[in-house]
Length: 212
Image (cartoon, rainbow, N blue to C red; front, side, top):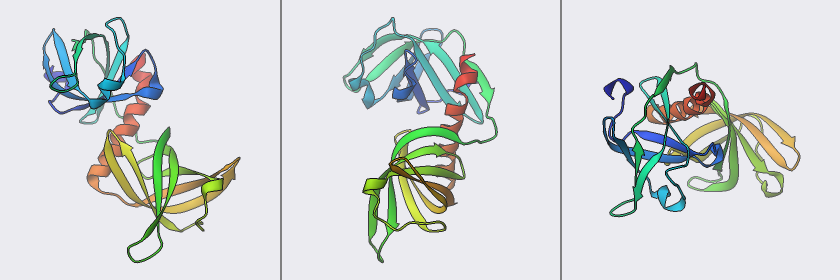
């Protein structure tokens, strides 16, 4: 399995029966070639899964996206929620495409500085995402802050169970139905945050290609 860049601690996404709206993030904790893969996640407590369910697992490593189909062998919850999968017969791979903007629906918070050490918080959603910016949606009936083009704010959201906070500047503002949309550019972003965002984007972007 070395050719497929598997490492203990690798983050993987699990999709069950093509339900792409409910991806589960797993952490790989071991494998036995030709027999099984073993992963863990606290989210396993919330799912019902049988050996007949179709599972698709994807992961990103060293500039390449990987994906394979498998089935559950067994699951246990003590001493921690863990799942055994059939060792994949075939793992497909593809190099990353150049980073692009992908559609998302990620719960987020906008934080606007209102004092030296004070911030106002607005519940929001990330509607699309790239390595350089995002589109933030806020319900218009909850929006009371005076934010406009070239104003700055922070956006906070989760990727792969990792908290992401990025400094943004608003490039455009538009109204759509009962929401306000802020096209935003990242002002400063750390290497680890950029890598997490890039991995997330490429995992989504590679979905169709991995399935073919």
